Image (cartoon, rainbow, N blue to C red; front, side):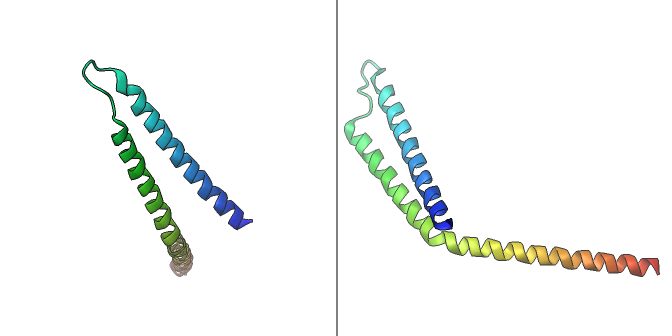
Length: 102
């Protein structure tokens, strides 16, 4: 179940990223015909933008794949340490209150 959820989240992220790219490209394409002398965005620039975006998406996916598990383990461990520290401080606080009453 968890693997399916993770895969679903991964695909959702990819689809949202591609959707953002398509929206950006369509906005750039639509704004191209305004100026009198301007010829808009050339197909070479659009192709360059698409390749740069594709490279970024691939790089981000690889980076997420490599960093996700260690980062999750680190933050889980850190959260546990903070919880234990908080419990220890609560115990010390209760002991100090008892000592103050006596």
